[in-house]
Length: 511
Image (cartoon, rainbow, N blue to C red; front, side):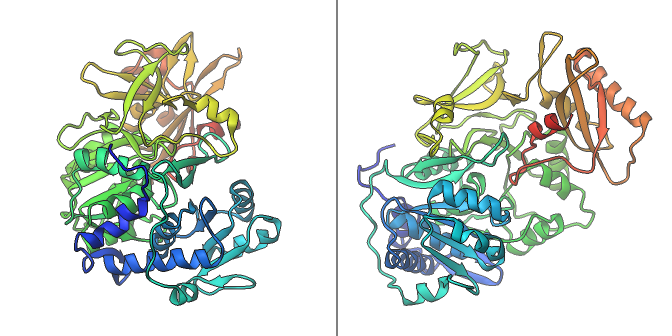
């Protein structure tokens, strides 16, 4: 993409909508509020000026501990506009998590919602770099009122003349393989994703309305519900609550979004809701976070008449590098490479593998994070020059579709043969009793690794030895015999990150 050397991302995603005459158009639907692009523009400017009054400047970090709400948008783009670095953060964590993030990021200011204050307040004095805490809602102790500071600040603000290669934000990894790492992203990253993925692949337009059940505090939701719609002058529905299936369907029925974004787990739960809701407004439904089982694709399309587009991205890549496209879906695949990226599948020696062979997926694109903050060794292992090692294993078929085989450290070697947990999980999901399934390796009596399945049953089914044998037989009948799970454990739920990714390392640790 051609961008000037001096470029501030906030001008593209906020200011440009005013220049295009969209000031009176609704930018954000939030509860019973309709916030126009003009109001968004002014509040972003006020937030930027308020941060400057608190001595926040270029490259200073600002931790955002906020649910999906308008103040998130004001804070996020207000910080970027003054050259500071916002860090979206899960508002449902514990005090120890916030202490880690504050110390790791050295954030100078935290903007926190009152609902998270009780967890954050105890660690303020143990965070040596933190200077100020702003509260959305009622402040307590030494914190300041976010709304009061904005009310006093000017609504006029010139964007800091940052470079297109300056740091714009950090997004912490979800921790599916261990401790969160701060992935650094630059000013040109968001526009790279919108203009080379969202526009040509998804076709988002000004008259669209986006709703993401996946939240703003991680990279998937941040794009879905914030910078995607703002780039095209569309509208977004911000909804701060946890993803209860009935409530999600009520939100869709009320605001009639055209784009809906979620994860396979929630799509499965939405299909279980018996009450009928009006979802005819939806034209694009994206699924990410974990591979979408083909059974879910067909069930969703049959019930609601809309394709589920399985897409794959990562925090390090900013958003999606593989995607099924409308009208070109291959169920069970992650789709094709998006125009924002190049991809290749390589063996352990870095050599590209042939079509149909399993290898490690590498992607190259301008939106890739250049490094993890203060994680030099992990940066060297992941950011391989222009290429990002995704940590995923894949095969590619002759049509150019990519088939997920599991995380690199999730792959099992059984009898000298590589086995994909995903392949077994998708087969188990074909059984009418299975709601969710995860597969990890466990040592047998000879200390040899074999597949073990962890299965969550639908509410109308009960665990039993006959059902366990039935599931094992299903896998044997569909896959090579050595792939069947030697053990099947029925569980109430699977360990997951907040983004819905199964944490198989926790399953491995429990065996």
